[in-house]
Amino acid sequence: MDDATLADQLRQLGLSEKEVDTYLTILEHGEAKASTVAEDAGVSKRYVYSVSEKLDDRGFVDVIDHVVPTTIRANPPDEVVAALTSDLESLEPELTTRYGNVSEQEREFEVIKTRTTILKRIRGLLERAEEEVTLSIPATLLEEFEDELRATVDRGVLVILLVTGDDAIPESRFEGAASVVRRWGENAPMIVTADRHLGLFAPNEMLIRSNAGAQGIALSQAQLVPIIVGSFFGNYWPMAEQVYVTDPAPLPQTYSDFRHAVLQSTLHLEAGDEVAISAEVRPVRTDDYATVVGQLVGVRQSLLQPTRDTFAVENALIVELDGGPESDAGEEIVTLGGEGAFVEDYETRSVTLEPLE
Image (cartoon, one colour):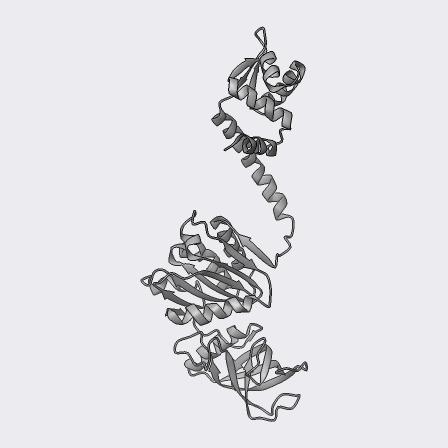
């Protein structure tokens, strides 16, 4: 480190330019009279006394004024650094308390540089999710997030979990920790999305090595996060082995998350249940919502094996209508899609599943 950089870093600790010069002069001498320091630093003797008292208060030097003439001794650098570190660490609890009382404005795009921050953000997304989470993490981190995953599932959130880097984790480990789990022996990027508008992406090595030098990206954009979800389901999910699927939920149930409705519809059809559907929908590319009432007769999905999709990430419900939607259906069999649907007949806002009477 050159002199200019050292001086700049000392100024960041709150020392003025003259205080830095005075301190470095004392440091070079180890111990010296005030007159010697004043001459070498180019300041007055009175100024040296004044500055030395401030440096003494902060632990940089020790003013020895019980002898004549007064001398100023530099404290060992390791002791100075330790004292400064302790002071900074003592600030953390108070800063954290104040930070916790301030609602952080979500940034649309943020580069994350540390593993610690990535782990904190994963935990935060799990805690905040209200409807849906997709998560791809290395198997080595599964234990770290198991409690948060179970709490998220217990809140009724759909949790789609991909565990990478280990294809031998026992299936029993996943019960209650997710809605659907797949494992893959290869490494994959860390991907987290929550409620279709919050996302997090980082290279795998950033999570398995603290000094990888890689960076992650956090997004808060409803237009971009679905692209991450598409990458998750299109590129990595198909490569993995399905190892756990939740049981069908007792009916009736209402879902505002369409993927969750598709999952539960699939589970009930596979169980041989006859299911009635009532859904708030609008014809694709229109603005008028109506109600579709009918019987669930099929699904198109890529969440569960065997898949029943005609293209990657397809999710649709196939419904035999009871008289059609209030806005005039015109067809006996219709397809319902989720937010942004364009190949199905209807875009769906909410779905209620109940036993067919």
